[in-house]
Image (tube, rainbow, N blue to C red; front, side, top):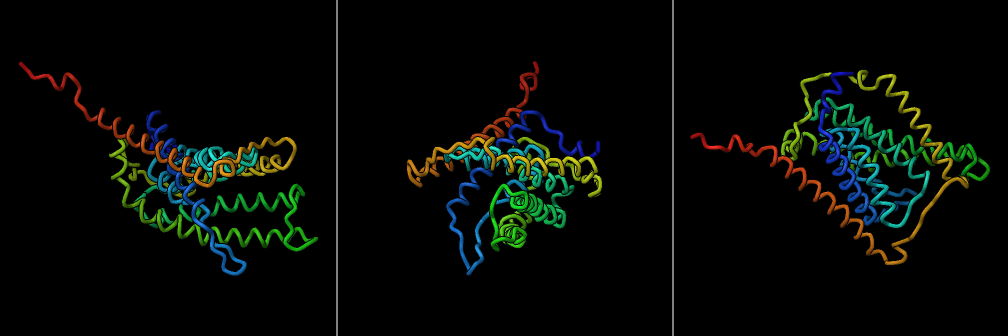
Length: 294
């Protein structure tokens, strides 16, 4: 797909900036969701799973690969490690599932001004991520590495439980905190935010179909990564897993979460400042251009 690759031509420094910006912004949003309480309506629990519109917007406007990996890593660093928690192989399952879903969603959009493309990519990205997580949880019960039987003696009941959780996350978090904000932000930010950060907007003149994105190679890699996610989650339930827990919240109190929030916000601010500085340096005329002709 040579045409597709041409749309994502960035310098190494720009790729790094996109990576760090996505990591810090999504890490910051992940901390904010920890402060929002869940609401129970009978047996149904409504909670904010994540602010998926942030990585989705960055994946659509910038490079989907680096934005997706950065967001997934941001959740691990700011949402887990800085709070004194690390789940070992289980974190790899989250990392693979989330980054794969965001990358596919960002790659599907050829025109950020097309709301149909943006909306389809946003809801599909959440659905792919939740489907991978749901499938992994079901397989863990069926394989026998985890006991989660809603109906005693009937392991198949986990399908109903996980299926309902899947629909709840896609329809609640997927619509309110992924679809609607992404539909609003992407068309309005496209062509405006990229020049501010010293980047060119993604080229919309190159058209391609969904089949050109979802190639057999990409599908094969996605299936392999999904299977790897289950393998890592399986290993997290065995003696091979390495878990680290310092429990900073229990030691210092709930206020410690603001340390992670402040760190993520500081990294994001520094990244934006550096990107703006790079843009100013590029726009400055060279010494030869500043010379006054004699």
